[in-house]
Structures are given as C-alpha cells and as structure tokens.
Length: 207
Image (cartoon, rainbow, N blue to C red; front, side, top):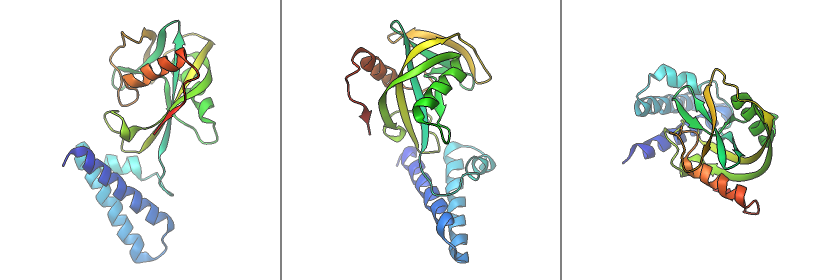
C-alpha cells in the first residue's frame, strides 16, 4: 500500500470527524468524533514526518462541514512568454495565484493575486481548467483537498515588484521553463494555458 493511499484515508477520517463534530449533539458521539479527529492528525503527522502539534495547529482552526479549498491561478503571457513568480519558501517558480478569498469572485481573486505577487495588473479572459489536485501530479500533496481554477489573463499594466513571499518575477518561453514549484504549478498547466491562448474557442477542461 503506497503513502498516497494512506494520506487519502487520513484525510477522509478527518473529514468524517469534523463533519460529525459540526452536527452531532450527543456527548458520547462528540467524544468519539474527537478521537477520530485526533487519530487522523496522528496519521497525518506520521506520514508527513512532522510534529503532531504542527498538524493540530494546521487543522484545528478549521470547523464546520469540510469542503475543498479553492486555489486560483493566472496564466499571463507577454509575446510567447508566460509570467512566473519565484516562491521564497522553496525557491521554485509558479503561476501567480493562491487561495480564493471569501466574498470574492474567483476571477477577481486571480487578478488580485497576480497584482500582489507580481506587480502586474491583469484581466481574466476565460476559465481554462477546473482541476482536482488529487487527480494530477502536484507534489508535495497538500493536506487539504484542493480544487484549482486556472484562468487565462491579459496583461494590462504594471511593473514587476517582489514581496515577502516572492523573490523574483519573470517571463519564460514555455519550452525553457525554470524549475517549477510543483505543489502549485505543473508543466501541463502552462502548456494548457498556451493552447487556450492560441485557440480561445477551446472548451474549459474539468475533472
């Protein structure tokens, strides 16, 4: 049995526990769901080779019914080069983007994230892909179940500006990409964006 399967089981146990704690009222059931939650955290800590306290801190603020998290990414091109940003935490490159904010349309989130991470003002043109990250080779796998929305955007204005999360900003030919932060962006994301840029009539891809 591979580690990916165990990770999925731990995630499912955590979701069952959190959903149970959201809706149940009987004291003994609450205690059992708390035990399940603790077991899921211990499994995740073991699989990630991380301290249990770190796993608890990562998950415990989350409550209510468990749903996937939404990650928005922007594909921005200048001539035939794609905009990438270098992440400080792993020194690798990704499409600009991040978590969608509450009360914010996903397209606006992609525009905001691009401005915050790169300094460039962009406008979304179309949704290129809606991807379940569990079904694609993003690595390392995030403990959360993530749905990724990838938008094709047009470049309007702005200048490259680094920040506390991003150390470099540049445009790259798609056949000469730097080392990617593959937990955030994989090569097929960029290739898909390039195809949609060439033919905007292509349908949105989804899992």
